[in-house]
Image 1 (cartoon, chains in turn yellow, green):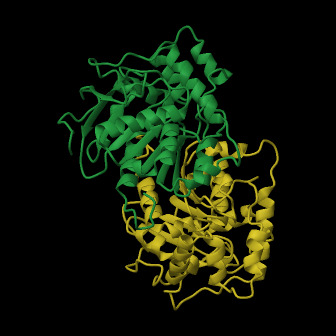
Image 2: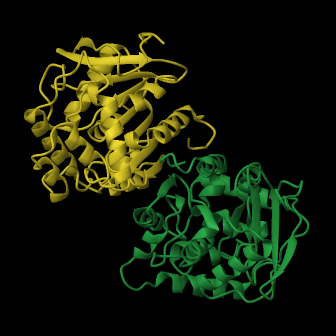
Image 3: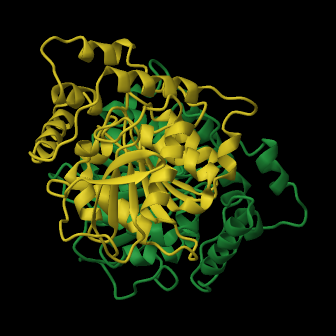
Length: 295
Length: 295
């Protein structure tokens, strides 16, 4: 596929830069195959380096994978928007600058909200959507890092960086924490050409965007009914960051959304059960559009 | 596999009879393969003839399929129990009489409740469980046929038999009703060796069992935490007979349950999306037990 390189892993794919919309966006693209390009939209404070190669790389066998730093993240220029709508505008500018007119999307957490906003703003951009650990506008208990179940990890002086991520992305069971350790190990495989980690100013603006996204006017969730895209919604049953009830509301109100909920998993269900997730995602993206069968 | 015949379809498999526990149980078994035998436990008023060959037959390629009429249903002798526990006792007597010591189970609706009861009473009976359109003890809004959304179909003088089933098992959309028509067409392929349809006395006793199953003592759903079986929970998002919230409660409280919710589907999601369902069920049953990956 045009633009794909022979580098097929997020461990080694070079970071590229696109000038568009008065900004410079950092991105990576690799892989290819019969599927539509697959745009990955990232979680709270995450950069290009936070995408698990166990998820990106197998999907790159059948899809060109496109990872992207929104404005103000990693090595992308600009200010981190304080609204999801602002982030959606940057994502459109990036896709337009790249010349990608239609793609599939995997929106994770914050990225899922951006995907939902984009699907409403310009439906033709996406063929199918995969929404993991995310919430609709008007969702409940979205990323309240101040609540005790999360704050205790941020306030624990023995935890730093990825050790915190392991606590907050995975369930407090031995099996889930082991999966979290393996996840962190995969992320640290990439050693060069790294993004700058997000600082407190990124977090503050993204938290402001979550607070704005929790607000709604009119009938709650009614806006979802106009999103006709075939969608796969995925969540861990013990997600403390964006509780699974938000995924329930998504599939109850989106017209064509299949729900998959993993046991023994928190916010990082897709990384914990990466083999199952990649299989489900690939089958969902590959399934026929006219056969009446969810993937 | 022992007892499997060369007849591999519920359209043509002969009905057999087993004398055990002072009763005569009607059953069918067909297919075979590397998997454990797969016991099917049937829905409210359903007989052997209500199992969709589009679901049973593909699963019979890798599993011996065992369909069974509980006491008082179809051509099985005895009284229909007024409790789920009573139905579980008959299912144990049937399996014991058949010499099946361990199997997988697909419990649908009422049958899912019987499977849950059996898993608690004698955990070693089941390797894995598939629970479709069902509810835990203490679940909500279980089979309230008197509520307007369901009663209107029973009271519609233009509807009889399978036409009612199509209305109550499928969502009120063109696509779901079309799938319902196809489902009814598949059921009517079997023309001989048929069960006697269930009458009002069957319905009355099974409704009594639903009412008893809605009751709980102590902490709601706490009983689920002792059921360690790897479980696949499936529901249609628009199920009016046993609402999807019951499946949410199952996966939130069962220690190892994966949830799959189909869009545009009611109680009969497994029949509407039979290709997807069979693929998911077969993968779930085939997946390794020690690899930490849900199916």
